[in-house]
Length: 156
Image 1 (spheres, rainbow, N blue to C red):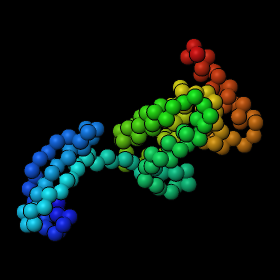
Image 2: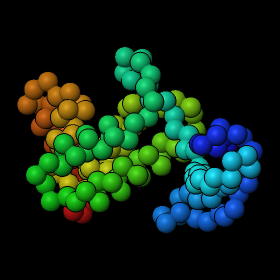
Image 3: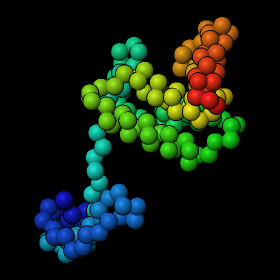
Image 4: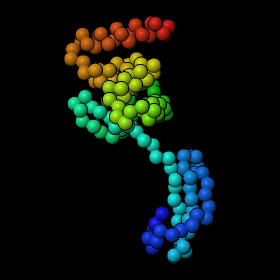
């Protein structure tokens, strides 16, 4: 770790402790050369798969895209930001656990669909209409019938 004051690589750790949220280790360091102190944080590097789009393009996994799609589907619905964040966390965790280095966008989209289906019917249908690219009212009705059939089977 280079000193931010003199760029010397030699320093010593004076103190280590967990950060407030417990997700990082906070280290106080002292430069051996100039004697100034500075703080560093050590965090676990999360390895997420690359998302492969329908057209073959590859993009890094981006949780903000998932969050914005869910927020748009949940607009004007009684769903808190915390609930949305929990959904995004669960989807991100599942993507981290995906066995390959690349994940099809369809897998991510289906996970969002499943979460919204369990959360709110209106949000689910809104997301499905964009995700499944409904061409007409018939496509919309087919999705709605499938959704209602699932809800009936679940006893809801």
